[in-house]
Structures are given as structure tokens and as C-alpha cells.
Image (cartoon, rainbow, N blue to C red):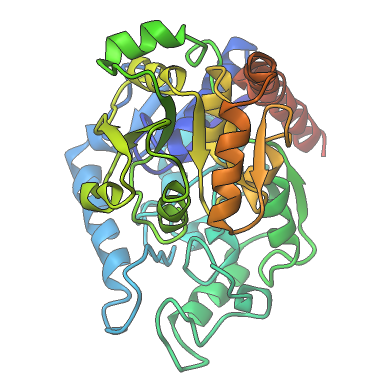
Length: 411
């Protein structure tokens, strides 16, 4: 079988990285898997075709991405959040890669990469769409943040600050309904995301199932904490609490909840560690010592960051999965998260981490203290690693997808 993955975004990070690890897992199983992407790098992988190798396609990609962003320009009071229309994009069905494929596997396809209308051009090829956030089912937002209008057709979009029933969100939702065939197989990367899709207006009557996101547990594995701290230049006898995000200020990341939880900790007992974006003045308000590792661009640095910590905190209030949670667990570091949305599927409460009461900072703080001072801390670390390998390793997830590919080809 020949599988073509359609992926927008940089393959070295974000939602695309999970898709790339799946691709690698499929290749290891002997599946003829290829990627068609807007990634600016192919990672020196000859099974990856990026549109950026062609100047013509490169310019088109940049223009389409800009047009997609400008679609909200008339909503001057809109929230400054990512909003995608799926109404512009290159026709990937003209590519050689598409013509050679038996199965089309969509992943994150935004930023002006895929026009939903082009999906109707897919003929005699099964389509699988792995949903990596809420966008496939909404009128343009990537996380609904409590709004349930995607269940009834959108309009009066709170993220657009719109008072019109016939606004851009309703137009986008109608556009999706027009061009999405019910033969498409939907996959949520968490039970929560699949449940949201089942309740959506767009995906009524669709075949929807859950297959978790994956990581490479041969890339993320435990490093002795003392060694990791020495290599990162962290010299402290305090308990290390790690958190991080490429964009911590995103409204759904819950960083404000995390800061409030830190203010409840004893500053003589904890040292904070952060990777990615960081508002240092905000962190200083907690009174706790901290180290900023900055943006970590490679897996080795990320592995050391996870391994140096006594606990990793993922305070997201809405997340489709929680890839950093599983990466931390694979490195043998237990996790505190809220018992909500995608992350609730990943952590087993008081076995390999702690699920805090949504969305209470004091419960996050309680979870941090419970983990780092647990009399069974060593067992928590072992359980975290075992859970990551068993449930989320790319090899195991690839096997599940292979069975799905066989299923759609038979039909």
C-alpha cells in the first residue's frame, strides 16, 4: 500500500512532528509512506516532498498563507488568535505524489496549504484525516474554548467578536460541509477530541475513532538526573519543576494558572525550569528561583530538560493531546496536568503522574508536592516510562494505523 501524508507546518516541531514520527513508524513496518508538506526542511529524508523546493510553489504557499490570515481583517475587534478558513490552497491532487498514492492521509493542513474544495477532487482513493486540534470541526477557530456553536453551525463567533449569524465562521463551516465526503475516516488523537467531533455539525454521521498521537521513545528516554543537570548547567539541591511551550502566552496553555500555583510553593524547596517562550517578570513574581533554557531546537536538549526535572507541569486548559506530557513521561519524569480535554487520557492518576482538579491552581500545586515528595517516586518514574512506551510509541501507533489502512482499502 502507498500512503501519502498531507502535512502543513515544520516537520521538526509542533503538530507536524507527531505526524512525521508516525511516518517513520510506518516505514519501519514496510509501509510505502511518503509526505507532501509545506515544511521548509525535508529533514534530509527522500520520502518527504516539500513544496518549497519549487520557487513557483513556494511563492504560492506564502501568498495563500497570507490570504488565509487576511480573511479576518474586517473583524477589527477579533481576538488575536489563529483562525483558518481552508478556502485557499494549492491543489495537491495535481502532484505526482498524489497520483501514485493508494491512500491519502490528512493531518494538520492549515496556513493556506489545503483548500477544502480540493478534497472533493479525490476520487477512488480512501481518505483518512487525523485531527490534531479542533479546526476540522469548527468554523475557523482551532480551539473552541467553551463555545459550542460548532455543534449547531457556527455564526456570532466569539473569537471574531461577531454579532452576525452569517459571519465568516458560518461561511467556513458551510464550506466544509459542502466539500467533505462522508467516506472520509476521522481519527482523533484523544478520546476528548473524538467526542467533540461526534457532537459537531460538520461530522454528523462520519466514522470517527481514536488513535493517540505518537512519539519516538528511542529519541526520548531517561538520562540520569545528576548528569542532565550538569550538562544543562543547573546547580541546585532543590526540587526542579519544569514547564514550557513554544508559545506559553497562547490563551489555552493555562500559564496564568501555573503562575498562580507556583505562588503556593515554598521558595526554599523548589527551583523552576522553563523551555520556550517565557515572561521573566511574571515568573519573578512567584518569588522562586528559576532557569530559562530558551528555545530548545533539538531532541537531545529536550531530553536533557525533561530528565533534569523532578516533575513536569502541563497546565493547558484545552489541548487535543499533550505531546510534551508523553515526551516527559518517556524520559521517566512524572507529570502534573489538569484532568480535562486531551491530557486526561495520558496520565494515570497517582500512578505515573497527577491529574489536578480543572482548573484550580491550588490543585496543580498539590500535585507538584505530591509527586516530588512521594515515597514511591522511583516507581512513579518507572511507570511513566512504561506507559509512554506501551501506549504512545510510534511503532505501536503505526501498527494501529496499518490496520486502518487495510480496512479502508478492502472497502
